[in-house]
Image 1 (cartoon, rainbow, N blue to C red):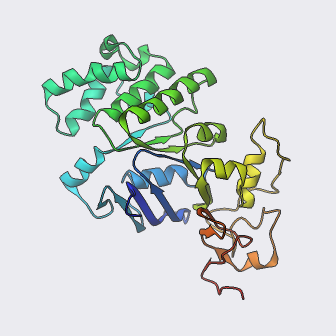
Image 2: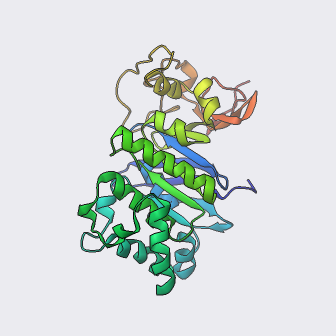
Image 3: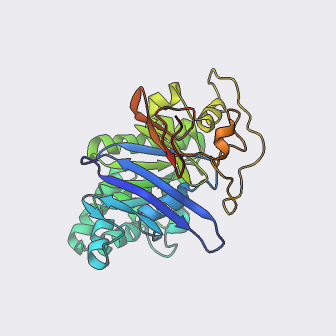
Length: 320
């Protein structure tokens, strides 16, 4: 897509033990929007984030960010692009130096991207104020702040280089509900004011619904459904998505209980990898490995399922 800020195409990443953690992922993020990524633990969400951040090198595929292929750039150019692509982790305490003040940690990120000392000293209190913390917190140490305050520091640090895209990996899952709401509202407010785009990774569907414009659902290393958030919630089409949404409290849906456990990513089933748990599986699912294709009646609603037309499959003949 020519208007995409980030476009990942056919991303693959396997590890030495044979685990196919990411197995043909396509993702698109437009400027100023939020893409949510959901799925069970172990489905490849966090590995995908590390690939997009170039903390891991993909085995195959491309990552176009702001007109550059991140899989090909190196050295100072990669460092420069990373300033535009930042990260908010699940546990900020583990990513902050306990011997460094909060202000020092924020400055460190700016210094790494070439900002001079005078500009850094001016920007730190501005950033703390922007995320709702007193500028005096710049002189405190991580152990002196609460979990919610530390997450605000992590957001301030991510914003220090004026990024175009911030990847939030389970950024509020360790916080209690009231603090979660405050941090989520802060992220929405910052997006509105600064125009920053987010990739928001979470297992909490209610949180993703609150912040996301579009949602990608992952299962065993692949995206199985992707659409606008409102569309996905009102009209889920992949059986796995239907099961996930049926478990969200307060929804008027019959609970769909999946049988068994996810297959091992080392030994995936033939055909559709969800078929061993799918309540809608048919004989064709044993052989056909469905690719992510637009639905016939909504080209912005992409689904990887034999029940969705038009038919398009990876490594299999198209049925007549």
